Length: 277
Image (cartoon, rainbow, N blue to C red; front, top):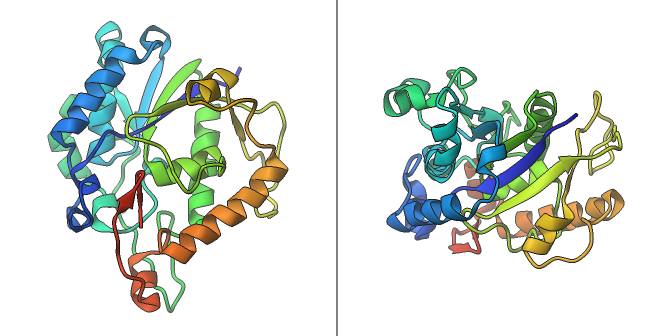
């Protein structure tokens, strides 16, 4: 049976304080961020049921995972956070670009499993004019591909209940829920998902896939926890919401790479509800 996934946005990082801090490479958590982790640790009700904790290899997500889910590691001392490069944040600005594997190994030592974090995982360079891109570049196509790869990886895991700590922007691609794309997730917010019983073989843009999309659905309890009534929007509705959401992000310069921003001359702004504008 496919596992239950608890998706978590990281705690407040230094880059969340102001636009000027977006130049900080792979920033750490703020004092408030550590406090948010403490509160999540106290309030999360299912530490005892968690079999696996995975996180984006950026420092703010790794520390959020370690601090917020300490009870999991205390009861399962052999368990480590598995760092998963595919769930790193979407943009190529400095604050969303991770550290080299050697630096992460020195900093996190035996607490994090970094076997999947190879050289090049933090290379997000996109050549605008040549349209040259790699796995982690900030384009809709690449983001959809690695979000789907992450879902497939998690769906194939033997664990029954998994925590995944990642980023606000990437979570829209991972969950394929674009209902609230203009507001986003708050720091340390968690939502709970199960894998759909339906097999989808095309993405939200209608492109055919090389197999199962590994679609997920937010549970009713999770939606009620955040003030929503009824189930997630249907897949057909999500196709319309996706088009509207990504277009809105493009219009505001949210999903552009550094090269795209320079080419389009989109001025930088500030963060609103966890989304940089």
